[in-house]
Image (cartoon, rainbow, N blue to C red; front, side):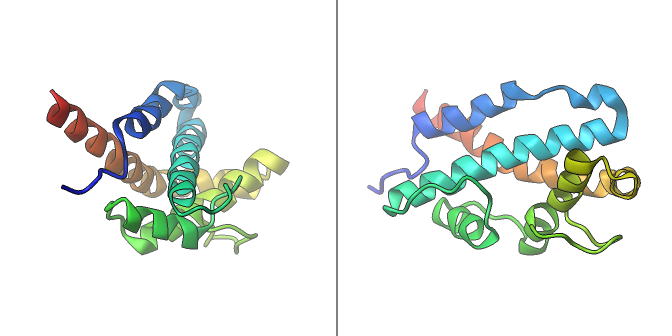
Length: 149
């Protein structure tokens, strides 16, 4: 019998992130985008740090694509690599080609009108990717709970 790497305790902690939703969606497309991104960021950071703890590595306070990709693989979670990068890539990015993370940073740190407009234009695409990412963990949690009952 193999040990479940995402223990019930860890899955519950990940599931509890859902209750932290700041309800930014009430502020329209930009708010909805920001709300989804923040939930994804918290989940990705937790998942990445669970992986790092299991492998005796120090925690990271930021998302790194390589570590996040390794975390997903480690926990047997499948998510399209290009979508992962489109949501979580860091750095500055180019106008019209920014990741969700870059847009969130540009808008929240400097209230960039250009980033705000790009968020409005791309929110439907990014929101779908972020919902899929969140859904990975919610589905795993629900499956684990049913198995325990």
